[in-house]
Figure 1 (cartoon, rainbow, N blue to C red):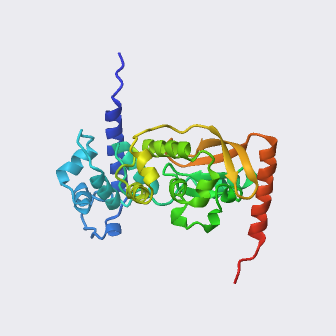
Figure 2: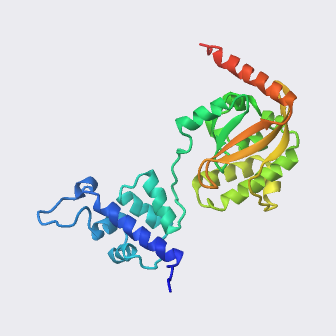
Figure 3: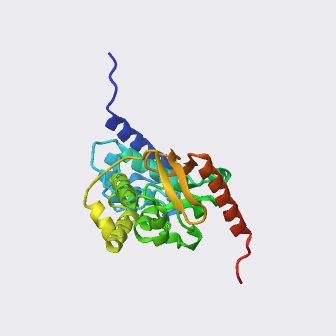
Length: 290
């Protein structure tokens, strides 16, 4: 008879091994400690990691022994800093511990030069990379003129939730605004369940609630829905009405970055998107005013 260890046990043992391996690779000098002449421990000692993390030695020892103990996000954050973990190692630590990182990285590793080149080459199909918070992380020239001219939007405001509830040009391009508002808010609420305490999410939610009565109304419904493809009309300010299918391709974990594209559903829309791409290219060729 073969017994498979519960998933939680496997994770605790993997976490213990990971912490031990990271501890043993750090020289005392890297964290401002003095290496004594009789030091036999490779890397840091457990009590040194505990001191650097401001946690109890016994508690940290139990963590490396795969004991079944509760670990807060704040303690994991302190341990990650003490062990000098990079972005990938930090994400791995929180995944093994089953915790939510209180200080996730600002950059998006999914937007690589290859991904940027890919969305550029999708033209004339409008395409962008968004995170689950609706921030626009990258886009091609056609998308930059699809719902409104993004060149005129401050970087901190390049968020589709914010634009859909507060920006007149963006709102004018959405044919069925009330339905779109409800759908976007429902997707945002579903995604936010995994990010309830993260500052970037709470700041955006506070901004939306302060700026838009429409947002407050749909947010109070507590509706949730997942991501899905959908045919929609867009009223473009430059080339007229477009009939497209909104599609999503995940670039990482299911709630991470995604590539969003607007595929034409008829020949007229295809022609108009080609015209929009030409307008975008012409705009990029115009030298900036001095």
